[in-house]
Amino acid sequence: MLPLLKRFAALALLGFASLASAQAAQATQAAQTVLRVSAIPDESPTELQRKFAPLGQYLEKETGMKVQFVPVTDYAAVVESLATGKIDMAWLGGFTYVQSKIRTKGATIPIVQRQEDATFTSKFITANSAIKSLADLKGHTFVFGAPSSTSGHLMPRHFLLQAGVDPDKDFKTVAYSGAHDATVAFVQAGRADAGVLNASVWDKLVEQHKVDTSKVRVFAVTPPFYDYNWTVRGGMDPALRKKLTEAFLRLDPANPEQREIMALQRTTKFIPTRPENYAGIEAAARAAGLIQ
Image (cartoon, rainbow, N blue to C red):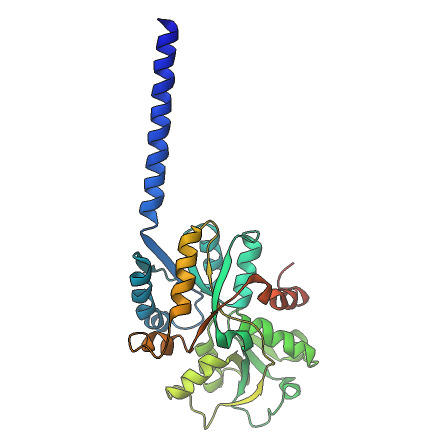
C-alpha cells in the first residue's frame, strides 16, 4: 500500500504543478491583453496625450489589445518603468534608449523610428540681438531642456564642446527647463539669453503661432544625429514585438484614417531601427561624463 500511496501523492503533486503552471500562463496571457505605453515627458502632459490618442486607437485595432497610456513624471521614470516591466513600450529619445539599454543590460529593444530621426537636429534660439553664433554665447545665461534629453541637452552640449564652448565654464548660468516647449517659454520671457530644443518641436510651435518669431530666432543648428524611437521592454513576446513593428511600418499618410496619426507624430514614414544606431549617442554621453 505504501508504494501506491506514494504514487498517488506524486500524481497529486504533478497535478498541482500543472495547474499552477496553467494558471501562471493564463495570468501572463491576461496581463498581455493590455499594452501599457508611455513616453518621455519632453512636452507638456496634455500635448503628449493629444499626440498619442489616435495612435493608441490604431494600435488597439492592430493588436487586438487594450492600449493604455501611462504618463510619467520624468525621463528616469520611463527608463525604470521599462526595466521593471511596468510599461511594455515607450517613446524614447536616443539618450534615454541608451540609458534603458544600460539599465537592462541590453534587454530593451528599439523597434522603429521616424525616418526624420535618422538625421535629427536641434536648434539654438535667442531673443538677444548680440548673439549670432555659438561663440557669442560665452558670458550669457543659457537653458537646456531636460538633463536626459538627447536633443535638448546631450547632443547640443556635445556640439558646443566641439565648437570650443564649455557650458559649465563659459556660460554665466545654466538652467534646465524640463521640456522643449518650456525652453522656448524661458527664452521668450527673457529668463535666459539663449537655449536649445529639438527642431521638430520648434517647427511645430512656429506653425501653431505659439512663439513670437519677431522676438525669438534660430541662430544655429546642430549637425544631424539619431534620436527618437519606439522601444519595447525586455521579455516581450517576439510575436507581439513583430506585430507592433509591422503596425508602425504600415502607417501611411496617404490613408485618410492614418493621416492624423502621422501628422501628430510629425512624420511621413516609420522605418526599422536597431541598437547600433545609437552608438554615437552613447559615445557622446560617456565623453560628456553623463554615463560611466
